[in-house]
Length: 216
Image (cartoon, rainbow, N blue to C red; front, side, top):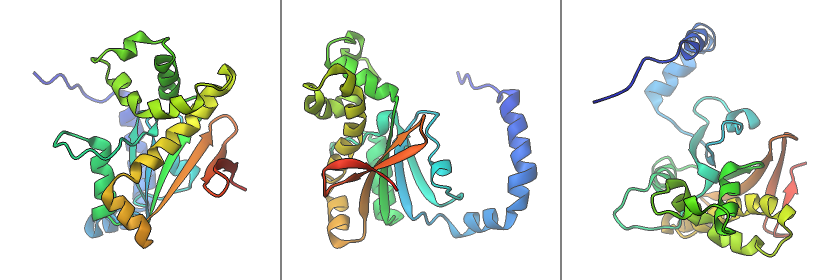
């Protein structure tokens, strides 16, 4: 039996507020979006974390970003095994159908998924090792990143692994044949950034120096 219930009142009130203001002021734009379809210039893969508001960070308008969110902004390796792959499906649609020009992986500080991966891989979260843990199995994607930071001092591991979540995703994206083709032809560019929630800052990965650098 379906257990869905009506929306909580605070969401209903916010909807009415949006409908009466932002929507009414931009009716023509919304009608154009509905009639012409979406033509985003970029796909953004970000964490589900409620503190990461990518449209605000980049000042994006409705219809500008094709956004996919998951735990720790991870992209799994290419695996055409006939199973259900939400992130891979979103990437395929963005690149092959929407023809986005940019694909941006957005990591962030204080990521709970990254902290869970660190705890799991270091033996401090046995519950995540269980096959029944959806979070644990998803964070297995980041194990190669953990191996790269395991020898760092404990106080540096979390920040380093947050960056690895971006790098592992960028590496895995290149295992998709259609992405590699688009990148090599110049039709698609990949980008990796890290958002510092407390400082409101962005770092971007610079392959020339193999490091994250502040965006000036």
